[in-house]
Length: 121
Image 1 (cartoon, rainbow, N blue to C red):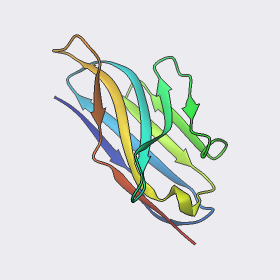
Image 2 (cartoon, helix red, strand yellow):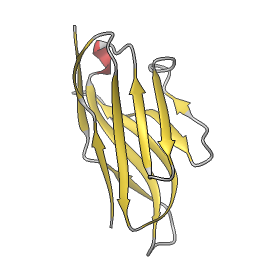
Image 3 (cartoon, one colour):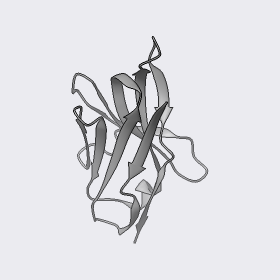
Image 4 (cartoon, one colour):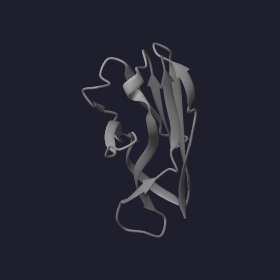
């Protein structure tokens, strides 16, 4: 079994910073990609940032210049440093990873349980 566990969400004021962490654990053979999605009330889940195993990064236009994604491949962890938070960043943030387990032959999508980020004025 493979699990993703997020931490670091909370309530902050606009302009402040927050760092999310996600740890992948279990019977992991290889991780192809890790990333962060978010879902605001009444909206669809959207990709925020992702980092493939080669270290290149992708950011949604709405967070470019404010958010930074990083990974520690030795610990199977991914982080999202969020600076200059805005009201519209309020959402449940989900960790995502494409993982091949020890017993599998293909990469499968795994999701964390989500962590709430609330930005107040």
